Amino acid sequence: MPIPQDVRKKPIDVKVRVSSGEGVDVTWSDGHTSHYPFPYLRDLCPCALCNDEREKKSRLATSPATSIELPMFKPRVTAKSAQAMGNYALQITFSDGHATGIYSFEHLREICPCEACGKDFRDAGPSQPEGNAAPVRTKP
Image (cartoon, rainbow, N blue to C red; front, side):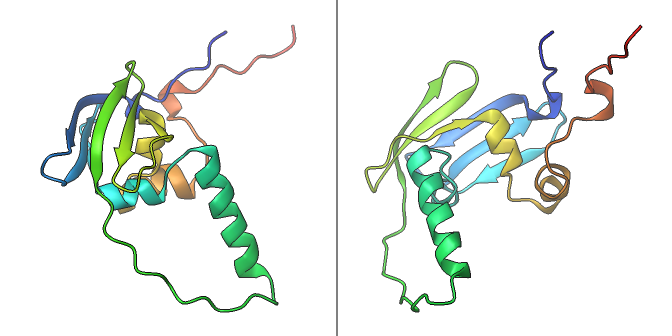
């Protein structure tokens, strides 16, 4: 039996504004609109390398013997190009050369920067709307 998809994570319109540098705008099937600046997307890249880096930084931050590092200046990240990955994701090539992250629409909805999505998708953990919940199987 296939796992039901959360219909709120299905886009009905996607605009990637590479030339203006504005970022990505997505209108979702429930009418919500999300705006993702390119630096925000780069910081939350879902690739394995970036996930490992974030995990390493969080471990070091909780270690009592860590030294305080001064932040390095980094130029504002922009997008050089973007392409659709089938009908489920976007792949963005950033100005820092990074291009391995594939941003599924499900991931994009979960990282939407608005407060409402934070409550619905990040704070609540993995969940499905009641109307799309998988049926509970019981033994006969």
